[in-house]
Amino acid sequence: MQTVNGIGGIFFKARDPKALSAWYEEHLGVNHYDPEPWKQREGYTVFAPFAENTEYFGNADQQWMINFRVDDLKAMIDQLKAAGIAVETRAEWNSEVGKFARIHDPEGNPIELWEPNQ
Image (cartoon, rainbow, N blue to C red; front, side, top):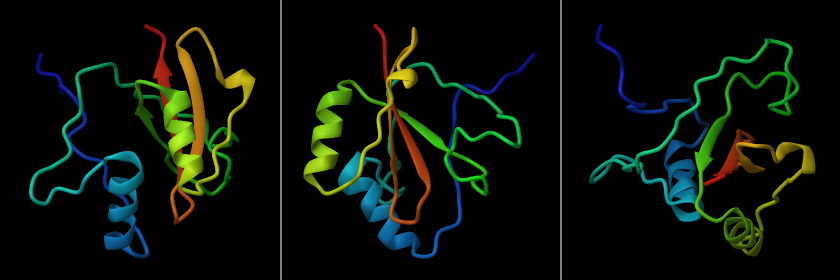
């Protein structure tokens, strides 16, 4: 049986795609596909549909949330806060799979940051 071997892209609508792409590149290092696409390092990717009434995304109208793996969550949090980006952490988000934090991009989309346990 053939299976997929990773995520080839994440596509979503934005009010200002150019500005939002620049924000992701500046603050998270995720570049647009010009001149070449962002390349992930090998690692786990969670594919998890949530119940339609979940409150986990923060906004009841939000249909999706992206989760990015990071090597050093504390350093990432410090970097984002220095750039004036609000970062939310909760003790209950930390679990046997790692530590988590939450930010929102300039258009209000939730972004989860995950430092996996080694």
